[in-house]
Length: 126
Image (tube, rainbow, N blue to C red; front, side, top):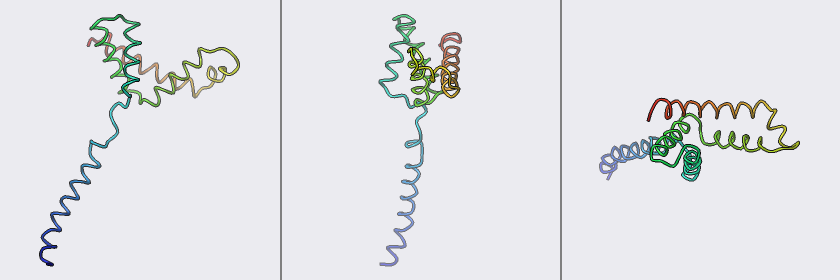
């Protein structure tokens, strides 16, 4: 009985190591771009509305989104987009979004990522 346990222990240890490797490996790693499908579709529809409803436009808009997602995590994209949306409003409540450096920095990060995406996908070719 003791010999059976000793013989099985290395197998159990190896199996445990495999499970640990799977749990810590790429399968559970943070996704390279974490933009949900609905946000991706919304971005591409808006991009195509601004750039034409063609196959080439679809390709370039998809490229642009992939480039943007590789440069800016989704939560930062949402924050900057929200600030931009609020800045379009008028009144005293929107003033802090127009004059606060933190919000300026968030928008600047988005603008830089958009500029890089444009260079990659529209000026550098697809």
